[in-house]
Amino acid sequence: MVIDLGTERYEPPAAPARAPRELRLGRWRVTGAVLAGILALSVGGAARSPGPPLREVHAAPLGPADTYTLADGLLLTTSVIDPTDQAKRRIECHDLTRRRQLWSIDLTLDDNHLGPRIGGGLLLVYEKAAEGAPPHTTALDLRTGQRRWSVPYRSLLLPDGPIALVLDNVFRPASRLRPGQVEGAGEVYHGSDGHAYGEPPIELVVRGLDLDTGRLRWALPRLDSVRLVETSEGQPPVLLTSSPDGAVEVRDLLSGRANHRLDWPGGELARAQRIGETVVAVAQSGSGQVVTTYSADLRQRRWSRELTGTRDFVERCGPLLCQARDTGTSALDPATGETRWELPGPLRLLSLGPWLVEMDQRTALRRVFETRTGRTVADLGGWRLTDNSAWPDEIPLRTDQPPLVFQPNVASEQTWYGMIDSAGPSVRRLGLLPYPTEECVAAQRFMACRVPGAQLRVWRYDPPRLL
Image 1 (spheres, helix red, strand yellow):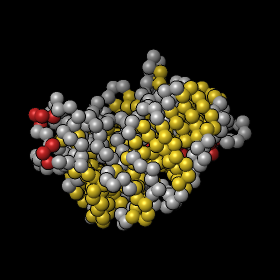
Image 2 (cartoon, rainbow, N blue to C red):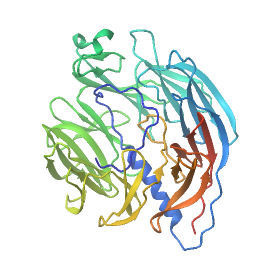
Image 3 (cartoon, rainbow, N blue to C red):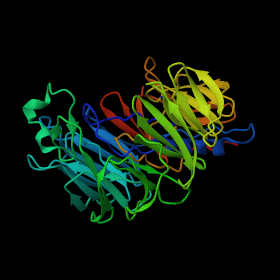
Image 4 (cartoon, rainbow, N blue to C red):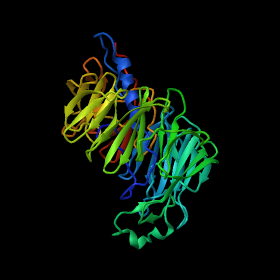
């Protein structure tokens, strides 16, 4: 599997045997772009001054089921307040700059969706409702904790926009499973109404909510799937929706109206993302996939290619489109489909300026490749990338500072931390922490880590100027 960047989610919710159709956002694009900022900070001469040590600004107990994340200089934590009921949680918000707690609220959260989502100055949480009723999505003001609105379904946020999307799968009523039937029922599908079903959904209803008020702005019934795609810099993303008749339409995000029908090769819409001035869409067709590319405005079809291998996968890797197979990884020009280079084995790649960094299935870094040629230029083995969201979230937290990398040493009970320098490319060591950390998140000028002794530690850091 080849991607731009994956973030290891710290406290994932209990997932269904087969996830329902849902909006897949290009999470890895954002973090890759953030890491590219490291290059801008690190270009220059040889004289370098040592970076300042991290300054601890917060420490608190952290249970094994507790979660945490950073956003806009805030630390948000959830903790279990009733050991007999893991859904009963206390959410706290701390201002790390002023080093004080802003608010606290106790909620009963939906078992399958304990992870709050952040966006538009709001914290969205999934509250458990009465028995038999669907869970509610409740919006809390991020700065005050006050309730803004609540709706009887789950919503998925969209980045940089005033709309929240609700994806509501509709099932045949007779396929609903009673609680005693779920175990041993084979393939189980979970609906947004909180119930389990023994058959796949028969349609998808997509709703657009006003993020500020929670009011319904538009609804699109009888769909098969929906995907979000950016078409140009600084413009709102658009929706690609597929219907049972096989048509794929390009829709306006704010109104839900169809702009035009896509020149679609057929098959179920699986993924779509922008790479430069090209939009790449993937269709599931039989046992294989079809990759088709379009102009950035989605009006001109450029080229199409069928992937016949059952494990073939394509994803953005920097300015290129990478195709992973059991036998190797190929980098394609997204505008023409021309193969630029090939490497052995299926690789998972992170874009970092002119480089591609190989990662494992977590956040451990491996080799560095030159993007244009695929040539190996460095080994970053032993270093890990700090995640930028410890909670499950379709929207990665945006940060205006480069995240850190760290290298835990369990034997010495210490952890090196540093930043990637493009001159090598290599890791520039910045300091040493007196803990063998394994789970760290970084956003803006703060880093939070779970450390031994059931503790959460948060540090402030100022990225050094690399001269």
